[in-house]
Length: 446
Image (tube, rainbow, N blue to C red):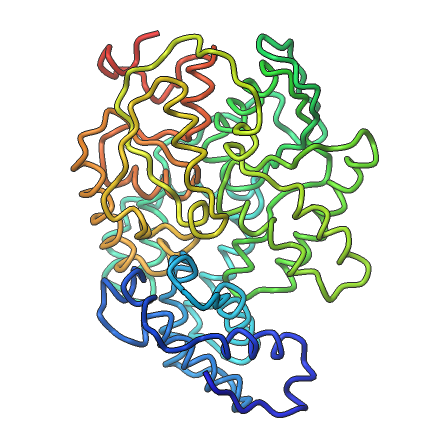
């Protein structure tokens, strides 16, 4: 795509990077076939190609964002399916991230939108605040239908409906600063890893990291949770709040750098694929910060999804080979963001599960961080489409690697949905997941 940026504009490194990305686009339109919003809405401006035109026009003319571009950029899920499809290597992720930051700097949203986004940014990344908010949501849930009638407040209704009816207790031994050690019952790999405790997942489902720690310990892997780490920054990053996102990234880089110096790390294990995509991009996000550029690059190189890391280990025979039929939902951040497609399914098959692919597996479930709250109508349509496809393969269980997908899909089906590592922990000697209580014997038997 031809561009006409001035030399003064290209002196800005973010603009220069976006110009390089835009020039790679050849207008082929392959991305439209796999873009969830284009497939759902049928509007060219809700496709990656259409959004690239809008971003180009905005940046090239050096103008503030307007209502049209905000509408169509806000509808983007950042599922990155377009990057998997694109034959020209267009890094749409970096381009849309830049556009969101530009929108945040130059566009004044309506007051309700500003307040809702500020609330999400100040609550979700902080576990104590998020836990308190979920408890308050129980009081507000009866008013969700009233909020639906007030258009600008529909995101609040979506939040209330997504909130769990009960908040699980924090898992013991998972607080930052704690060291998790256990006797190995499998091959002693002699590895030492840091485990991201994160933010929302640690509140919504602390059992995921607990299962990860148990499984890795039994395999002879030492797990540490460095003091000072927390939210990866993806939630604020995808809302264009770059100062907050970069502050989170720097805090985590500092924590993991200290852990590297205190005993070395073979990997930084991430159990939420959305977080993993962002952490693996820290090297880019902090490339212009001389104090953090090299450290961030080192951290990104160590970041591994838990299944990506497990695939490198010599796993023993499963303690209780499973026979349950599992529909594997590949989160967008896993298959498109991190390009991890085979490892989770192969691990589940090796553990004895019968794994079935989901039709239209490339399409997003509609979760996408805060998307299911900020764009509830589109999100619900994508969720219903995903649930129909999952249920079409008649699974006993659903497995995925992202807490957002678990929450989103779980709100639309009665089929139990678990994190992939929970099923692996169970197969390799761990306790039966609590989510399977009351399930048929073929699914839940020890």
